[in-house]
Amino acid sequence: MIKRTRASISKFIIHKVGNKFNSATNIFSENTITFDEESYELVKPFLLKPFGSVAESFRFSHHANVELNEINNYTNEIFSDEASFIEVSKNIVHHLYEQSNSAQIKTGDVIVALFEDIEYKESITQAIGIFKIENKVDFFQTYMEEDVLDLYVQKGISTRRLDKGCLIINSNDDEGRVVLSVDNNNYDAQYWLKNFLNVKYANDYNQHTQNYIEFCKDFSEEVLREDYGIQEKGSFLAKTVDYMKENDAVNIHEFKDEVFFDKDDYKELFDSYKKKYETINDVLVHNNFNVSDVVLKKQKPKMRTEIKLDTNIQIKLDIDAPDASSEYLEKGYDEAKKMKYYKVYFNDEE
Image (cartoon, rainbow, N blue to C red; front, side, top):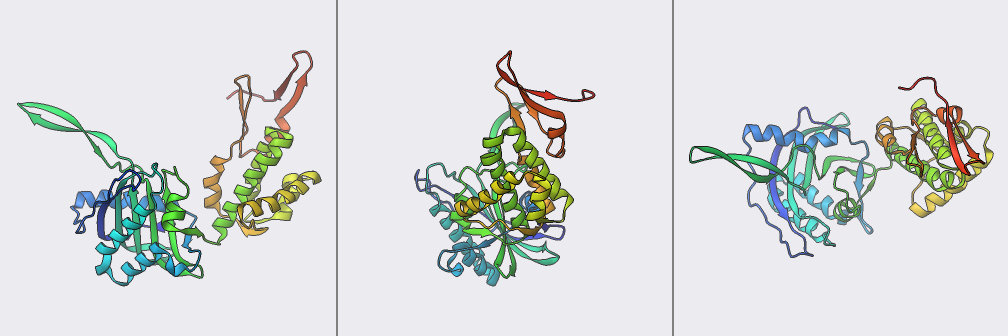
């Protein structure tokens, strides 16, 4: 998460990246852009605003040595010698081009920018931004012809949403240089984060919260829904959110006691699935960690609690009401109709 109040753009260049599968080649600029005031005031928030709410951070990685990570090396060059900015920006595009290992990888404009006075964790520093514009929108342009104003369609970059982007902060911790990323066109999960940036999640409380929530979501889907039904799945997710909202830290033993209460069989399934999940996904789900409110807020809308029935009726369980399902929703079987049913209790319709 960054603050951009004092931030400024000191260097800015645009190139085009092709796709080696469809013979689309790269196109390079030879000079940086000098902005007029109007363009500058649009570009800076367009590029930086998405990172104001990013909680998860990454660190560069490499199977042999992190010093061999291409983007890590390229950004080191720019931070060390700003005169190398134009040539290094071309190398960044070359590297991105080499990751177009399928025909679905989109061509687009690539912006490389050097930012000054970025605030990250109460420190003021530089940052290098790499942004890929994959989609352009249609807009009308007007022109005068024979005393009549006419219009035609042009394509341009929308300032409403950034397709792909990363900020490499000139700040290091025990795990390396800080990297933030956004990807709103996540058609290939490997392309941007793994193949191009080659980064891994930082080992911090944001990632611990993310891992735990992902594990709980999988447990609710793979175990509770399969063995006990959608109502139990929704109830568990609501109780998980409630526990993390009410507690600054997760203790897995207290979590199981509160969420499962007297259901010892659920606790055993939970422990068993945790070991399986960690092995399959090669991830450590911590038993004790501080809760990230930012990550919880971001992940909560992704927890699906709807009960969709084959009679074209849906029942949506409120993720913020953990006890509503058990108190006001009953499941049964009607012998006369030979059908299952849900009985819902309420006082007033809203």
